[in-house]
Image 1 (cartoon, rainbow, N blue to C red):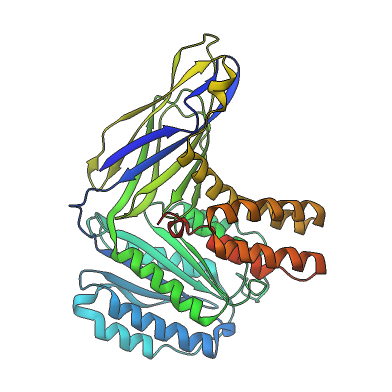
Image 2 (cartoon, rainbow, N blue to C red):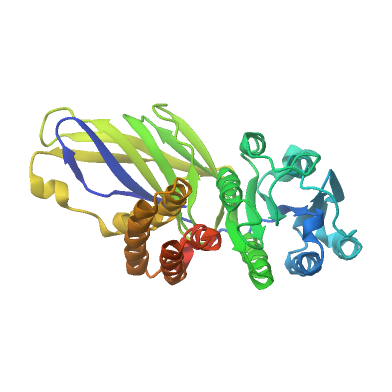
Length: 413
C-alpha cells in the first residue's frame, strides 16, 4: 500500500501558534484481493415499521443475502420492545436458503424502539464468534430504523450517550445507519452521529426506493473491500492534533486526542479506491526563518501489514508570498469537509432561532457545493433557502445534505 502526504501550504510563520492541514492519501496495491465480511443486520421491528416499510425491508434483505458471496457471514437481529437474534452470524455457503426463509417468516412489527437492547444484541453476535473469525474481515453492522429510540413505555430518549458509548467501545466493528422515512420521524442527527462514531456511512432514505438503494450501496462497498481494518499510526507528534477526518471515499469524523505524542486510530475497512484523510495540527514556531519543523510521522497498518513511514514537515518563513500559497488537492478536500460540517451548523442556527445566520451559512455552503459539483447537495440547499424564508420545515433537506455531502466518492471521479 502506498502512503503520501501533502500540506495545504508548505510554509508557516516562524513565530507563534499556527494551524496546518495535511492531506494523507492511501492507495491499495492492485494485487490486494477482496476480503470477506461479517455483516449484522440490526432491524427496527417496532410498530411504526408496519406495512410497506416492513415488506420492503424484508425484500431488500433477501436480495442482499442473495448478492453476498459464499465466504461472507450474515446475522439478523430485530429490536422492538426487546431484541431478538433471528439468525446467528453464519456462513452463507451453508445457510443462504435458510436465512432467506427466516427473513420471509419474520413476524409483523410491534412494540416500541428499544435501540439499546438492539445494539447490545448486534455486537453480541460478533462476540459469539472467536477472535480469529474476525481477523482479515470487514466486521460491520447495518442499522435500519424509522423512529426515535424510546424507553420501555415508548417515550423518546433525549439523552443518547448510552447508545454512543456502546458503538464507541466496539471500534473493531463499523456501523452504518439508514434512516427510513421523513427526517421528522427519526432523529437524523443522532443516526448520523452514531454512524460517524461507528466509522460508517449514513443514508437518509425518505422514500422506499432510496432505502433499497442505500442498502445496495452498502453491499457494493462490502464487495469491493480489500482491507478489513485500517489503522493510522501517529508518531512524534510535535503539537496538538486538532482534527482527523476521512474525506474520501466518504466523510467520517473522528474524535481528536489533543497532545498525545503517539496515537493510533482504527478507521475501519478500506475499499479498492484511494482513501484520504485530512489531519489538522497546531504547532508553535521556533522563531527562525527557514527551519524545517516536524509536524508528525505517520504510517498505516492493515491486516497484519504496514506501509512505509512518512515524516510530515513544514518550513518556517517570514515572507507573505510563501504563506499564501495553497495546494489545490488539500483545498478541495477541505471544501468537501466544510460542506458536511456546515450542515450541522445550519441545523444549530435554525434550532436556536437565528434564521439570519442560517441563511448566510446556506448561501456560503451553496457556493462551495456548486463549485465542487455536488449537485444533490446544491439542490437541497436551494430548497432549504426557500423553505427557511417561508418558515417551513427543513428536516428532510438537512438530512439530505448530511447524507449526500458524506458521499465524496461521487465528486472524485
